[in-house]
Structures are given as structure tokens and as C-alpha cells.
Amino acid sequence: MITPKILVVWLKKLNLFSIRAGAGTFIFMMFLVDSTLTFSKIVIFLLKWPKSDMCRAILNAGLGPHIVDSRGILESKTWFLTHPNLLEVIFHNRMRRYECLTNDSSLASVIYVPFYAGLDLGRYLWGFNTSVRDSGSIELLKWLMKKPEWKKMWGTDHFFVVGRTTTWDFRRLTRNDSDWGNNLIDFAIPYPTNFHPSNDNQVFAWQNKVRRHERKYLFSFVGAPRPKQGDSIRGEIIDQCLGARGKCKWLDCSLNGNCDNPTYVMEMFQNAKFCLEPRGDTPTRRSTFDSILAGCIPVFFSAETAYTQYMWHLPKNYTKYSVFIPEDAIKYGTANIENVLSRIQEGEVFAMREEVIRLIPKIIFANPMGRLGTFEDAFDIAVKGVLKRVEKIRKVMKRANA
Image (cartoon, rainbow, N blue to C red; front, side):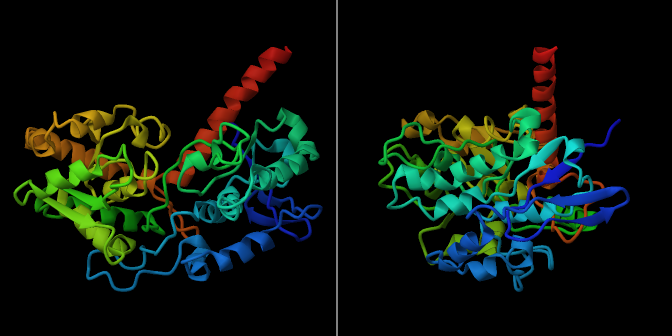
């Protein structure tokens, strides 16, 4: 079996060089020296990002600063204050240490382009027309189309990672300036959580910790009310939680930055058997993966929150690890969350929680400075998904040209 290779196209204003990455493998870096699409613009934007200390956020290869005092809720040395929009940086740093890199683009199975699309778009989402919002992506495309690697499969073997919190930022349907986002599309991979282990033992330790944890509540909800969002069911969920006679716990994210502290969030999720995951501004949110990380069985109200997005990372049989209650059943009062969850037998709850705990390695991004041996993390699974997807396209193109 031929080991797949990934060519790294690094968009930075430096010269061309290669670095030895291990026995028989190399990192190839193609630098963007003939365009204004440089990292310097992104760095300047990070420094000016409103209401956020992005200088701290990009510490530790994009993982952010270590969490120092978690009152024993979190494991030491493996938890970071990770910004949810910095997946592009984290993925790039993992790719730089990927074991199957080549300095020969003719051997590459796929081409990785570390264009920070989310950070680029984030500069222009508010107050700019569609031409400005699309400019970075269009400039990148024009540059790539001039490269010899593009002609191999006309770009269908190229990929990059988008770190924005919503895919709708990249799915504008028209050219109207009033419509949101730009014209890119993507394939969903998990949000980065705050847990970034460096080795297998740290993963095992965390899995055992959440497996043993006593769960005081039947269910919990971490989130803020959305009274101005007409289709939101959060108000009904909060009402049902507060009326559950001590069986539910609510962490109100609208108060005192409660949900900005991973210790508070993970403590809440570890203390509950089930965690409610309604829509937020978008169908999904990082809380979905925080609940899995805590060994808490997620309760979804829309298929778009997880089932139809994370095809590479979550089981197709969603009943193995989650509970589904239709949004309309909550909105129109035909379902009571406490009653639905209380009817699930303890043996089934145990089996579902074990499945959730088994999923933990698949939804986390390991520390780029470490290495997992037994487990595949979200990065590994995403890369495999890309390789399979490109290989299918390659076979179709070969048949068409035969």
C-alpha cells in the first residue's frame, strides 16, 4: 500500500526551502512571494481583534495559554484557553509535523493550503461590500491557478481549513451586499475544545476521570436565552430545566462570562447524565463537543446540529451516543425533556455514555508538540477523510479520460 503524501503550501513571505521531517519524508513549503496575501495582514488583524486578547490566544501553536487553576475539575498540562476561531492555526501547526509530507509535489495525493480563510473573512464581515469580502479568496484562487500543481487535478486535490464558527459565513447565495458572508464552502470538522493531550496516557486518564464521575443531575443546559431569536427554543428549554424539580442544572451564559471559563462549563457537563444542545446562532456550537468531552450524552433538537455535518467524526447511528427530540415538539409543548430522558433505562444510559467516552479522541485536537499513538484525533480523521474524498474524484477523472 502506497503511503499518502500531503504537500504543504505555506502562505508566507519567505523563500522556498524544505525541512527534514523524518525517514524519507519532507515538508514542502511554497511561499506566496508574488501576492499581498501574506500572514502579516492576518497578524495585524489578530492584534486589532475587538474584545479579545489574540496575542495570548495564539500562544502554544494556537492552543492558547495553559489553564492553571481549575479546582481539580480539569487535568493539569492538557487544558488550554483555546479560541474557537483559531482552528486554522491549530490545524496548520499539526500539519507542519505530519509524518507523511513530501517536497515533491508530483508524489502528493492532496495539496494542503494553509490559507486562514476565517481570519481573513473576519476582517470584512461588518461594513464591507461583497467584493471586499470575496477579495482574499479570489486572490488566493488566482494565485493557485498559476501553479503547476493546480493543473494536475484542476484544484480538486487542494484543501484548506476554515476556522470560523459558522459555515454560513462562507455560503452566501447571492451577490447582494446585504447578504452575509462570502462565496466559499466547506466540509465540517469539530470545533477545537480546550483539551489538547500530548500522549495517549493523558487521553486514557481523562476518559477514566469522566467515566468515574458521579452525575448529580439528569440533564443540564449551558447557554444564554435568545428572546430576540424568533425560532429559538432556548426559552422553552430553560423553562423546562428550571421546572424539573432539581433534576436539571442551568449555567446562564449571559451572566459574568460564566461560559468563557472552561472549568465552569466542564464542571456542569461532568455533573449531568445528559446535556441539552439546541441551536445557537448557527445549527451547531462548541458546546456539542464540550459535552462529549465531559462524557455527557448530548441531546439534539435539530439533525443539522451534528448528524448531517460531522460525517467523518461521529457515528452514522446517532442513537448509540445521543438523544434526539424534535424542535417542534419542544416549541409546541408536545414533549417534556425530563419525561423523555427519565424513560431511558440505566443500562442504555451506561452504554450510550461509554460510546460518548469512546468518541472523545475523535473530537479533540492533540497538542501539535506531542504525539498520540493508539488514538486518531480529529486532525487525523479529517486528513483521512480528505484523502478518501480526493481519491474518489481522482478515479472518476481517470475513468472520464480513459
